[in-house]
Image (tube, rainbow, N blue to C red; front, side, top):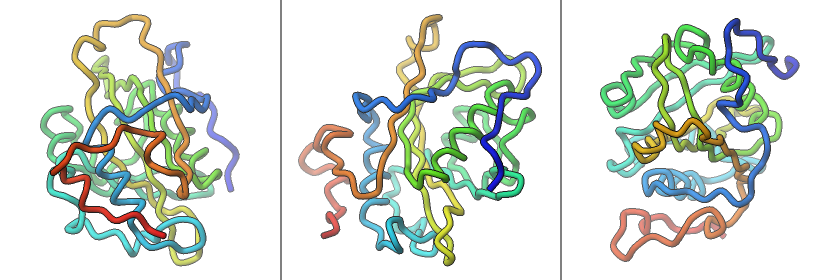
Length: 211
């Protein structure tokens, strides 16, 4: 396993775009992210996490598809390849990143912090919820809520991160004092401390809780 990635990008801002501290008070705001968490928790386990082979995009509710992404992790050295992403990321956030690596050309000054967050999650074998500021390329930055959920290969190593994201309310884009936040998501954790129960009739209710 390669050592944790350090900030090496020239010109990176000093403020943390992606949080490093686990914040157990952070709750999911987006119903799309709640839906993906419920889907992930419904998948069968190998050891303590779902297998990548158990992930079927067609079994994910259609409401989640536009904001869905799937990344593949590589080790020695650590890197992250974006395997697929939904139309919301392509069209609304102008991220044409399918088939590209997370690096300075795609995530700008935030790249090393994003990579470090992925690597820590893989080492700890946890998912994570985040509210973060990301810069894409030259000067284009947005504030996002995102969820990243690990999947295993047949050898039991975290090989992929399944995720979804949504832009935080537009007024957050104007806040100079925006504080990034992150919360770890262990596989066996209950969903209730992470978010409020879904409304009756919501697509979130279709997932059964595993025993």
